[in-house]
Length: 262
Image (tube, rainbow, N blue to C red; front, side, top):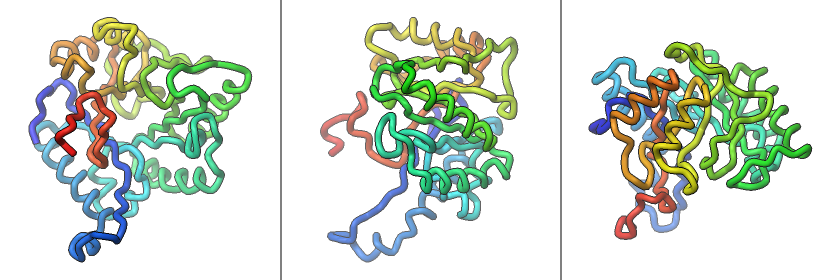
């Protein structure tokens, strides 16, 4: 594995668990322990990256139950968890209590190990544009209160993750100096900017918001962000940057997907 943009030095890994139907699968495939295979994969990524730069950060997203497998917590620096309070069954819908309880219990393994837990919830009805109505504001407040009570760092976003959402009452304070991981109190999760703004406008706006940590895509439709762009974003925002990569599923809806990949 080669890091093309060494300015990031942080990785946010999308890790949905893999479930294989029995029909048409070979016995060798069925005998695989897919959870262990994913733990091995993440551990190898972490070992390689940290050998190159000991400050490299690895954050998986979802699959928090992997914390029970030996070696996983040692391989990661934190975790992102979606839908813990809102969005599990659909945008704007409250997550079932039993699911929330299970996820909170899984994530406690991370906080007990001193790992940063980022929660991302989807309380908005519209998947693209946030609306701060009297119906939605209580969902946002509920999310932030419950996440914070558990020692997590919360954020509410639209499902498409294409809007720089700043939730009322939870505005970040501008950072005056670069932050350490254990100082993070807020973050933003945005993968692609809206078509109405340019790449440079997006980066400039993002740098001025004041979030402690930014989860963003490695590239936009114009290609990978350059080392110069990332260096400037880090300098202006003073934030920790995590580059999003999906290694747990083939995202054929992504702009860089090519049809001949199958």
